Image (cartoon, rainbow, N blue to C red):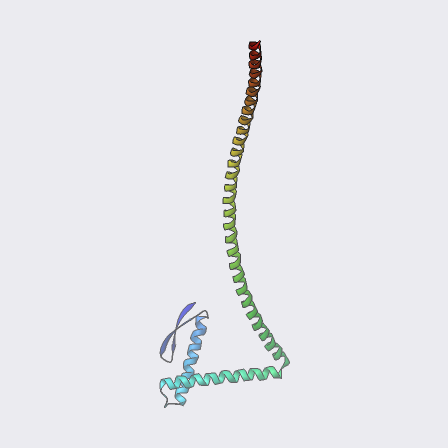
Length: 182
């Protein structure tokens, strides 16, 4: 956007826009000319009254031009087609604007979902890490259980062997007691 300095009827203004500077200067010149014409035709008016009357005259010219355009459109079917085409063009521009807004909204949703996906992927990574740690702990616990099972089996075997020894000793003791009694 450019700032363009213009002089309208002796007053300085800055116009901000993207139009060509020459075009804006030309319009400012035409407006000054219209203001001066109105002031010459109505010399009793002060500056503000002259400006308001000029604005009213310009609006009248605009309405007459619109009426002439409407009359031309109704007289010539080709002009009617052009007008319909312009109306369709405006409707398409509105639809385009609506679609652009929808696209921006969808882009934001995609961005939000992408961030959510990244967050969830990070959580999955953390959970996998915890799972791997839990698996290692489980494996270690299973190894300890297997070791305890081996020790238990060894103790059971030792207890069994000790029980056999006790039974043998009891038999021997019984035999010894029986030979003493004789």
